[in-house]
Amino acid sequence: MKAVNYAVLVLFGAVLILAGLSLPDRGDPYAPLNRDKSAAGTPNAPSYYIRNPERDADTPNMVTVILADYRGFDTMGEETVILTAGLICFLILRRERTKEKRR
Amino acid sequence: MMRRDDDAIISLVSRTVSPFIMIFALYVIFHGHYSPGGGFQGGTMLAAALILVRLAAGSDLAQLQFPRSWGTPLGSAGVLIYWGTGFVAMLCGGNFLNYAFLPVSGLPPHHRNLGILFIEVGVGLAVMGILTAIYDDLLEGRPHD
Image (tube, rainbow over all chains, first blue to last red; front, top):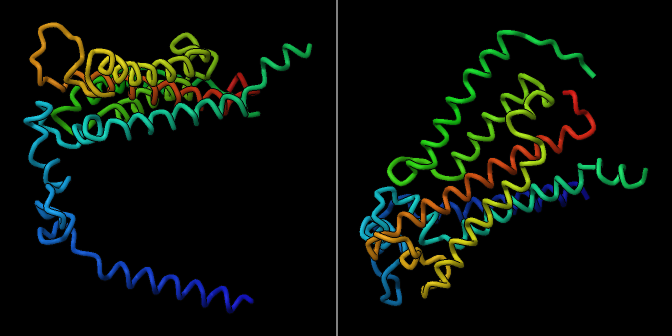
């Protein structure tokens, strides 16, 4: 059984490596993601995000604009996830209040 | 439980360094439009400054600086600032989180970076409060560490 596990692992790794080898290079301007127009003829998101944050939000830092403005909904979810983690730690680890009630 | 010795060097250095970390964290939050930075990074540095004092002086003494009960409410306040910014923009006629519709007087119509500043402050508050609260929760039951 162990041999089968290792074979599956090696096979999976080989598939991943094969898929990774055919990815476009980083920053390749001819990659489908980095073209100005998508295959359907509409403007692509990354080139828009690189060209327009200064005009849209008066902010030279395009990372901030993408994080907080274009993708503001996503950041809201991240912040809510952090709050949820804090509340879960609170609920699991704090025990003072229940002890006081029982006494 | 280990007995904690009051080391003068450690407490002096941490007390001196902590305000400077906070100042730099505020710079990282409020200058996030122009340089690398933002709410998450600045909030983490604020929490690091608070936890440094907690580690050096002990949690009991650090209650004077940032009480144990403030962490979770501050985190909730940060999330509420974020959501409130979105809903205020929605009430004033725009889409949710469309900062161009925020009702700030004297603002040119396409001045969206103030909305980004609001939500960065919210994110920074939330991260600082929650990280400090998690540290305090982990120390639950060992109050003198």
